Structure formats: C-alpha cells, structure tokens
Figure 1 (tube, helix red, strand yellow):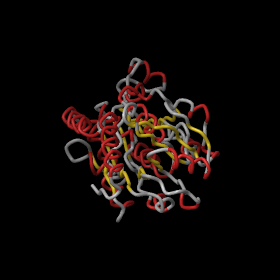
Figure 2 (cartoon, one colour; figure 1 turned 45 degrees about the vertical axis):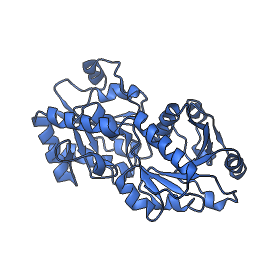
Figure 3 (cartoon, one colour; figure 1 turned 30 degrees about the horizontal axis):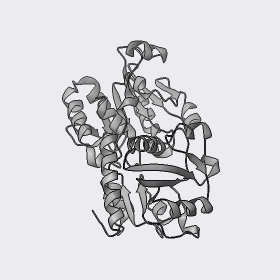
Figure 4 (tube, rainbow, N blue to C red; figure 1 turned 90 degrees about the vertical axis):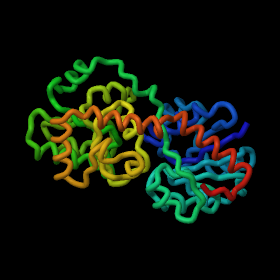
Length: 335
C-alpha cells in the first residue's frame, strides 16, 4: 500500500477543490490510499464538513507535516501551502496539485515539490514553467448529480414558470466568477421570460443581491446539485480565472447547453460545436438568445461525449495512481 498525506489550507463546504479531494479519496482504496489531510489554516477549517471526508482531516503545522513526510510515501499539497517557510525533511515524493492558474501557490512550496499535476493545459502553461508536470483533468462523481425532485415543481418553488428560459451559474459567488456579467446581460435583454439563477454562496453574494434585479434569483449553497441542474435551460461559466471547474463537467454530463469564457479547462474541453464561447456582454447576450431560440440537442450530445472522455472521477483516479506509481520509481519523470 502507498500512503498519501494531503496538505492544504482550505477546508470549507463550498470549495470545489475540497469536493474533488473527497471524491478522489473514495476512489483510491486498494493500492494507493489517502491516509490523512492536514489543514494549515484553522480559520478555513469546518469540522462538520471535514467529518464527511473518507479519511481524517485535522489542523496541523510543521510538526504534523514533518511526521507525515517521515512516515508516508507521498505528500500532495495544493492551494497556499507554504511549505517553504517550514523546516521539513526531504519528502520521498512531493506533488503539487495545480488546481488554479495561480503561479505563486507553487512558489510557496516549490522547495520540496518534485512534480506538478496540472488540472488543465492552460494551468500547466501558466503555473508549471520548468517544473516536471502532468496534465490530469479532475473528473467528477456523477452520483452527486441524480435528480430527486420534479423539474416543474422545483422551478415553481423558486418562482420560475415552466415556459421561462432559466440560465444558471453554480459556483462560489465572488469577483473572479463574474456573476455580475450574467446579471447585466439579463437586465439588458429586458425579456421577462429570461431569468438567471445563482446557486452558491460567497463574499459577493449580498452585494449582488442588493442590485435587486427582478429576473435574477439567489438560492444559496446546496449539496443536492442534481435537482438544480435538472431545472436549468442553459449554464454559464463566466470566470476570469479557473482551473478545471467541476460545474463545467457537471453541465456536460447533464446535457445542459453551455456558454463559457475561454478560461481554464474550457480550452481543453469546449469548441464551437459543443458550446458557445463568449468574451463580453455583447457576445453573452447573443449566445443567450441563440440557445433560447434553437434546438441544442447536437451541442449537448457532443459535450456529453467529450465528458465521457475526460470527466469521470474514476478515470482521474486511475491517472493519479499510474503517475504516483511511476514517480515512486523515479523523481525524474516528465510527461
């Protein structure tokens, strides 16, 4: 058995990276196993959420990480894990998971890292530079996407009629996600039959709600994402910065038409046939009207087929296992 310790600074309920970690850990049961996660920032530790992980998650620092390096086979870190500021022994293998286009996060721990897993081709180019790296898109657990509620009743529960066109964003509500672009687009379209719904919470939620846009709905964070995907007519990914957002894979699996900025893994997954790429308010408004007025069956089927190639967490786990086994034999591998 190969044992992994994961080091990170953020364990909160609405973090996409944390959800991915949970699903990845569940898939690694036989030859490779997540032994534990060490949270290095007590301010971003939610015990109730951490208790849902399949492996122990606890708050720790230099001492706990040093013990893990001594006793375990692989250290995996992501986010702002400032290992460089610690006096640590040399790990047998230390992998940085680049799950966002943020170079400085790697620079905080590159003293110990011998390999990087990049969540998209764009992230590899932006973050890795001369570091040995492998691109592995982080797949999703499709079991989370089962819908249990009736579509019409669910829409009515949030004030959406069946004939109305509902555009959704499922994401943490913050500046980088650019929910404000969808709000502006819906306002400018001035069509009472077009509505936008924002599923998630975050630091900018109250600010955006205060705009009192009549056709924009905010429902907060929900674990039952399958029921929310089931009521959407269109999905928007409008971020200015991303790695590989789970919601992109979720929309592809659920066969929801996609409007997206060319950000993060969108460059690996999307094209003119399986989505509509936008770069501002004007193109966003045009895309909304186009999807509203057309049959999008071919678009969504092509997106679904692409999902089957890249989006399953089981296949992601196999790629991680293969890489870790090879790195255990040599630290010089560069794929």
